[in-house]
Length: 140
Length: 140
Image (spheres, rainbow over the protein chains, first blue to last red):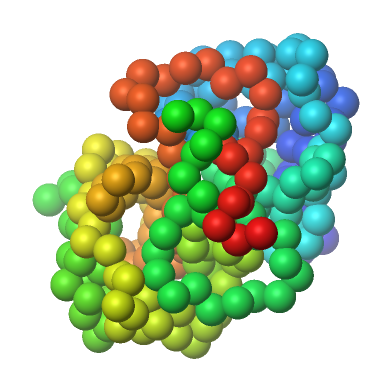
């Protein structure tokens, strides 16, 4: 198995844990020694394994935890680090995610997750300026 | 200078090029050999140096290119790769960015930029579900 396949398998484990609302499986996905971080859609960054895993326990145990699937995952391997870009599909919305992995004890582990809203058009229009996708109406 | 300082200096160069609308300086920030990617706020991912730099030329030459400053940058160095989380301030909105760097020919170069909308509250509320910051009203 090539590294990009291993990275994509680790990425798939993350979404399996998410979809199954399995907090233990989610904890196993994240790196144990490397410093981790997480940006949930619209939120300020969380840093450190304790804060990140606490946020996931809250998400996975909440009544609003959405069903989620991952699509179009592409891995970019950079030696012992890699990042994956993929689409997250939950009902009525698509998100885009950057997931950064590191090889820790021979296994690819997640060190950073950044998910955010995405236009639903299938095409890739040229952006003409760096602007937010909408402001964050639900949060203001 | 430690690696985290070097990475933060590379991150600062990215925002200097952005603020100065300097397409040549922007091109110099990005890796030449490693595969690059970019997620502008709300857009689908762009992959490959040509597509990414074309998007930046379009952004930097457009009449709507916003003044931008970077704040609260924190570097996470993972050997020869690193990622930076920082806040992007443009008028009336704050974005959050993940910037991934690789050491290429002894210099830290950008391989991935992911920017998205962020709540403007200074606190870090606990997210209770993985939901988008808003839907993407300007794009639908």
